Length: 135
Image (cartoon, rainbow, N blue to C red; front, side, top):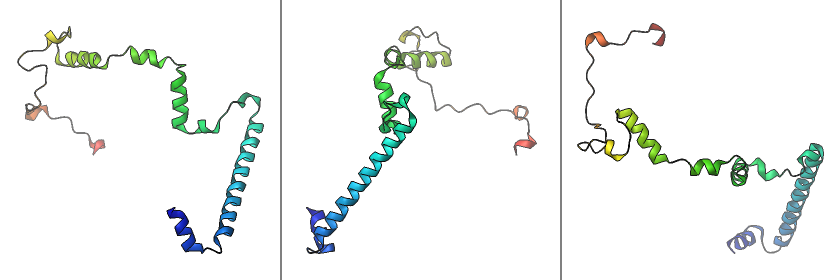
């Protein structure tokens, strides 16, 4: 409704029907040109691309189509992967624990790493070597 009111105010009531006809004619020509271009491209690609859809050129639509078809077996991989268990195993390996389950975490820290500890200061002999090319 707002667009109609703005169109009447901008073009005036006497020119509005002519503007609407021009706009619809332009839209129709654009659609015809688009369909003609699609037909030309399909005919040039040949029969091996007969089920080619131009919507597949959009990366999101292409990925959605590929993931929904599940030709790669991604659902099976996704269902067989337990992220919490994998992260617990990695955490246990980093902390030097066995990783046999929740009993492997120490009761005093609750399985957490103390991030408030400051690292030990290296001595004067522990300085990294000077690399002139890196500066």
